[in-house]
Amino acid sequence: MGVEIRERYIDPYTDFGFKKLFGTELNKDLLISFLNALFNDSTMEIKDVKYLNGEHLGDGYGDRRAVFDVYCMTEDGGRFIVEMQKAEQAYFKDRSIYYATYPIREQAPKGAWDYRLENVYTVGLLNFTFPEDEYPADSFVHEIKLKDVEDNHVFYDKLTFFYLEMPKFNKREDELVTMFDKWMFALRNLSRLMDRPQALQERVFKRLFDQAEIASFTPKERREYQESVKDYWDYYSTMTTAHQKGREEGREEGRAEGREEGREEGRAEERLANARSLLDNGVPVDVIVKSLCLTPDEVEMLSKK
Image (cartoon, rainbow, N blue to C red; front, top):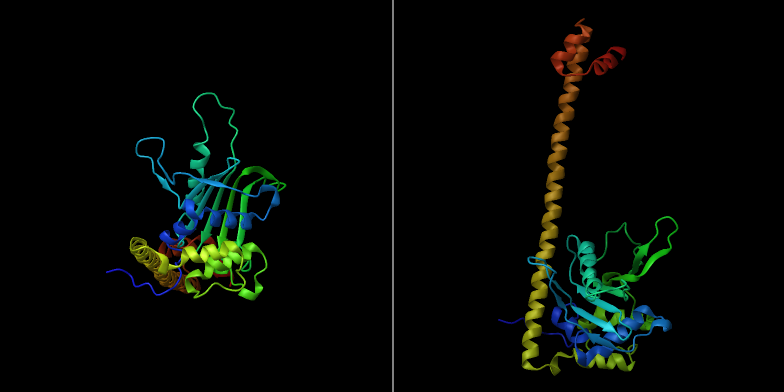
């Protein structure tokens, strides 16, 4: 049985929704607009992209493969990995770095080569937040580069990671100023909206909402979207359950350690009380040390009290 679809517009957090909006030749103008809004830099405006194969195999037998949500190349040769990360997972940063090695390695031609590389960008839209002590609560866009630790200058500027903590973006419609604000609002709220907001009147957003409207899908697209929604919620539920179980196991382990520490403290206090009694009755220190498994210093301290 399929999942009942009640919303008017697709959820971009699903695989189908994200690839429908950003991963097809038909809608590449949406991807270009989003990336330009993210960079907001007139010196590197993206005018066109070419979609590349998103599935990559390793160099040797048994190597892992990498499957990108969206993988494309700009007209100047720069490579973009654009991914929607549905839920937090262990070693997320490691995975992100690992994936970035594929567009780096594939630039190596056969034969002689001077090792010159084109830019590689990873853009991650995260449906979770980093640990509280990593970034301030109001900081949701993070641009990461290789930097020198001593003076903080950019050591290598051709490898860039953008991480967008989507749950932190809470601007209202009347607070949207930049195109990036508008894109974040649209992606954050698309599946909850019933009409295109007045603040999103640019032509690209009309196209976004037209392409996202479920009623215009073919029967095949509706079935695929229903399956994608089910997969999304199954995945989200599995990850949430795993996190809850991990927290509970951590609490139980902490309680067990606490009980054991309490028992150990009680036994230590009992040994010290017995040692004090033996001292008061004139028992030699070396005998007390051997009998109660204490150190000479611990017994000496008792004799001074």
